[in-house]
View 1: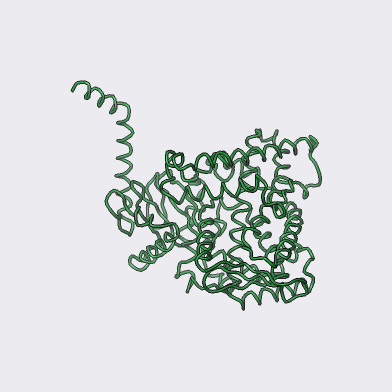
View 2: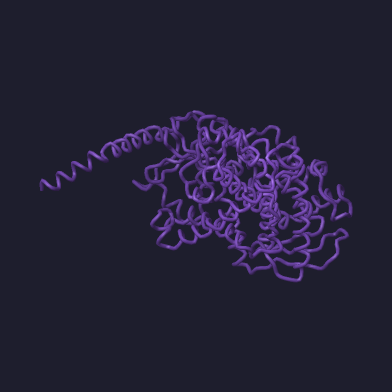
Length: 513
């Protein structure tokens, strides 16, 4: 008995303070959360089982709960409990404004730790002073002079995509992986100065490793049995992940070493022909960057720069395939700029002359934002509108929920590019449309992404038209009405498999951050 009491005493001495702090924190959260409209869910578990039914149903469940908050309490802040955490989700741009404009509450949530072995703690995942210093250093990378050079790269790889699709026009094909490899080639050349050529050589070890890492990190965020380190080890996730991380890191380090040997100490070529890696190497001494610092920034841009863009591309083409009259109008605008020349490079001036195409892309990103959820961790009690949110709570910035708020966008499920006409958007709050987030921690590469989207989509619609059956995401890729030569290509899958493709596309977007 004395032995058990002694053990209990030691345990309380070592861990008692921790549990007391946790209890005090929970009581504080309960007190402040009680003043915010909404129920607390089941005892202990909260809304865990309701939200955990499936990754595909979660967005719909959240939309239903958001509608209930607006209709029942006239509120614009959704809360739900997951065990001891109360998660908060603003539902309008006005409610988002305090967190988006905060210069203090900029820390990402712990959910992003799953990316750290692969991506490190660079700009995307860094917090505090490290994030601020990296942001200052990297912002000039996306100056318009640099973007001018990137546009040439985008055009070149877009043409490769068109030729690859043309060469496969007699085969049944899924267009999404082709676009994903195109964006991978673009970001690899602009980020590393490396011609990966994955569109012609998709079986490269690095290409497959990046695709596998994207899938694995998505699974780890969606599947409860992979939420713990033990579960990831038990089900073989960890070994597959570690093997792919090694391949990705070895490739990036090899490119960095090769690139450093090619560059002279004073710089390299013209400023607008330098890759992202070249700029990091040039800043190495001034910013006291280690090779690991450079590696993590390059890997972050490789991941964030191609996966979200390819997801956006997939949904843009899906929306066009299901709305033929809108696709036709976009095609007419594009042909008005380029005429019958399907091969001319798209210039920065051309991009400015495609306002309807831009509205189509924006409306697609409204419905299917490339990053549906971004998680912040509130360090201190935080005032959001009339509500005081408790410290140490997750706050989800959700473009998906804001963009489908019927008070902001009437008939939010309808695809309507004219929502973004100046006269229709001028009365909306600036943060009612945030596909790239906003404020200090917005997407540093959003202009890069929009250039890439407009160049690839305009190239596709110059050469092809797309259509879809109503069962799923079957896209028929046909030679366009212009002067492009060639026959007919199809993206075909049966009804059930195509429904799976749609869910996969949506789940892939949920991972991005």
